[in-house]
Amino acid sequence: MNLVFDRQALEEQWTAAASEVLETMFFTGVEWEVLDPEPAEPGSRIGAALEFHGACAGRLALSLEREAAESLANSFFGGPGEDGPEEDCRSVMAGLTNMVCGAMLSHLDKKSIFCLDSPQPLAALVEMSGDIEKNLRLEVGLLRLAFSLEGAEQA
Amino acid sequence: MAFDLMVVDDSPAMRRFIRRVIEVSGFTVGRYLEAGNGEEALEQRDGEWVDMDLTDINMPKMDGETLVTEMRQRDHLAAIPLIVISTDATESRMDRLAKLGAQGYATKPFAPERLREEIETVLGVSPEGALVGAGLDAEGGDDEFSF
Image (cartoon, rainbow over all chains, first blue to last red):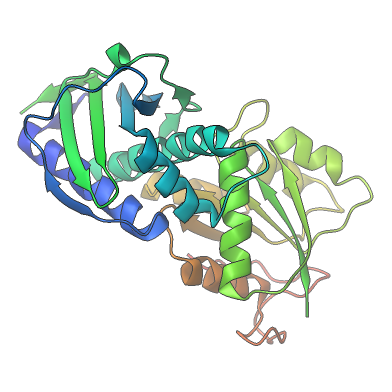
């Protein structure tokens, strides 16, 4: 049986999941939602995406301004790592994507089991597209989120 | 009292973060071992004793569920306390891991104190590090679930 979802509720759950992860693990909050953000300069953002499977399948992609990602990485790791700031940013975006997706899916259906693939770096911003797209203003910068869900029906 | 821990997660970032969280929480760690998946964790355990495993679920080569199952089937690893650390907070997953033999479950995101509490509960130690009666000691013990 396919999952049935309410689009507006799903969008609110995404914001809640991202807020929960950012506040608890990265010590930064979501300030507000940005409805019409400025276009991003090529190379100015860093992102990650993952696919998930289970009761329904889909994909989540997140991207953040590079400076903001560095700030998150510092909060997350407590300082620079041996592999340098670029690797720290990639790692932290992968971790953030994994946790936001897991938190969201757990809220979506507590009775089902989902499997999350390993997050992969986004090679280009063109990969930042989905059925639901959100832009959240964080204390450190603008977080973009794109989510697609297969095998689920909209209520 | 210091405890030897092994963290099993395919994300180096998450292993690094968990290590930092445990250190920040004030929990005293002796040796801190890391593995990128269940297979690596089992390979490292030949002749190596650790007091607790903390494992992710979704990993390449050998996932967390298989690792728990394998550990519980091996005499020298069967009694070692194990906590699952995962983004998956579904009841189905938690029930499944409990039945396989995991004693604790911490869902990401978590605050440092939450992870420390889970570790102390499963190890059966007080916040000061002393062993308490109801939990597990370094030689293994009961199968009480903390979730």
